[in-house]
Image 1 (cartoon, rainbow, N blue to C red):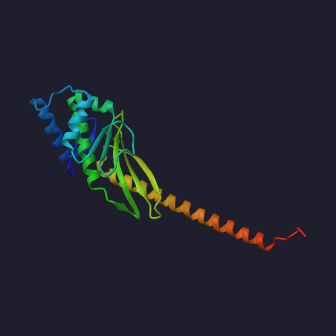
Image 2: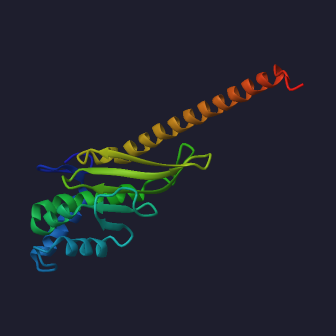
Image 3: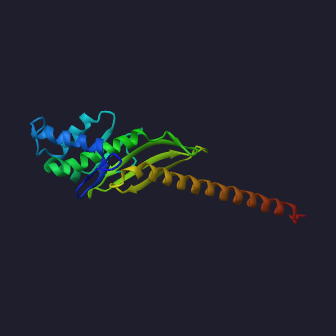
Length: 200
């Protein structure tokens, strides 16, 4: 264990707190606190009960939800969590870490406001982080980035880096549009000055 991280075989590094929380949930099932072998819907309800501030839904669609705490989890992953205690431990720790990353997400970054953000855990257990951003000229964009679930400490930075790229592309497009408008206005003026009236 290094820097507060725990390595789960076959999964990778998760925070020590995420691992301890997931282990506590696994022990709760063994002790009869929750029935094991539940289906995907029951697993979803259980997660929703425990993560009250986070909007957890079944599916793999990004850009669903408002605010800064949204997690969409595929039905397949929820079913795996319900049926396999080892998989549940992996994903429980991942969800815990995802919630913590989203809680620390800044409301704005480099002149962009983060209107909403969230994560998606897809059918294969891969994760994508997403955000809806509003730029300083009041236009909006949707940004999504795949993150390496084994490198939790980079999740937020990868999303913010992608946001920077999108903002820079947006600014470049605005600059090109202004230049194009300026050139079009200039060529219209030239045509206006050289216009000869031949109607007489």
